[in-house]
Image (cartoon, rainbow over all chains, first blue to last red; front, top):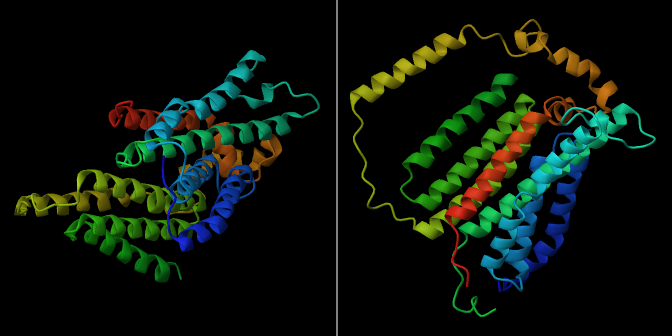
Length: 149
Length: 176
C-alpha cells in the first residue's frame, strides 16, 4: 500500500486543488471545439491529477499493482478511437468518416461534431493511462512496510 | 511591439538552455529545463499558437519534469564520474557553418502571415471556410486535428500507446 502524505498543508491544498484540476481537464476535452485545448492536454492533466491523488491521500494497493492495472488498460483509449472508426466502416462509410454513423435525428454536421467529441475522449483516456503507467513504472521500489499489503 | 516581447523571451530561452547544460547538479539542471519549457510556452502563446502553448506547459513543465526527477531518483544524480571533453576548433567551425547554411536557407521562406504564401493558399482556406458548416466546430484547429486529419491523430495516439507499453515492459518489476 501507499501511505498518505503526513503534512496537513499538502492535504488541505490538494483537497481544494485536485477537483479544480479534474474539472478543468474535463472542460479542456469537451470544450475543445470552441476554445484551445483537446484530448491530449486534457488527458495529461487528468492523469496527473490522479497521480497526485494517489501520492497525497495514499492507496490500499501497492505501486506495482497500480502499474500492472495501468499496463493492462493501456490500449483502452486507442480502442475507443479505433472503435469509432470501425463503426463508421460497419455502417457503410470510410474509416473515421463520422458522417456515416447511424444516429437517428442528427444531421451530418452534428454527427461529425459528435465523432470529434468521441475521438477526443479516446485520446484523453489513452494519454491519461499512459501517464499513470509511465509514472508508476519509474517510481522507486516499495519500501519495507509497503510490501506487507 | 513584437520585438519587445519576443527578444527578451528568446534571450531567456538561450540562457536557460545554456544553464541546463552547464549546471553541475543534475536536479538543478532538471528544474532549469522546466523553466526553459515555461518560457517556450510563453513564446508559443505570444505567437498565437495557444494549443501548442498548453501542451508545452502541461507536458514540458509538468509531466516531463516529474519523469526526469523520478529517473534521477532511480539512477542517482552524481555526475562526478562524467568526463568532459575539450571541444576542438573543428566543432566551432562546423557549428558556424551550419548556422550560416540555416540562415541562408531561411532567406527563401515567406514572411509569417503572408497571405500569398503556399501555406495560406493551398488547402487551409477551404478548412477555414467550411469547418463551421461541415462539422459545427468553430475551432478550426480541433476540426482539422480530429476530423479532416483524424488518421494522423490516430497514429499519434498509437505512438503514445507504444511509448507507454515500451516503458512498462522495460522497467517491469518481478511479480510478488
